[in-house]
Length: 93
Image (cartoon, rainbow, N blue to C red; front, side):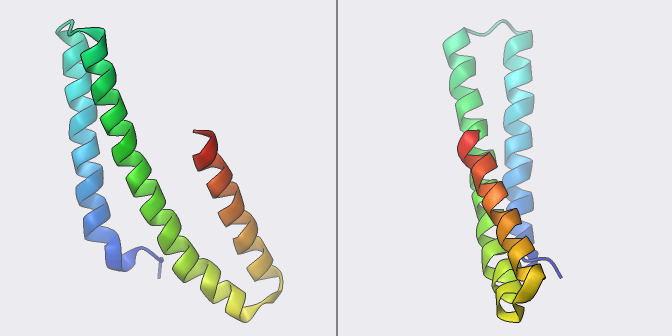
């Protein structure tokens, strides 16, 4: 079972909204919309995806990492490394 199971519907709803935003951005480019207006929408879509990413990270920490930490050993160390790498990727983006 994945950590985001309880949150799956909300995640899918947010992703669907972000997908709509990206399609809207493509339409704006096709229609030669003013650059700043497009950038505003890109920022909104980016924020929507960041919200999904943070929710997934939170679920991962609460479920996968917490469970592995309770068991201890190499699995716990690996889950902590994964979480740390995911956080680093999010911070860099």
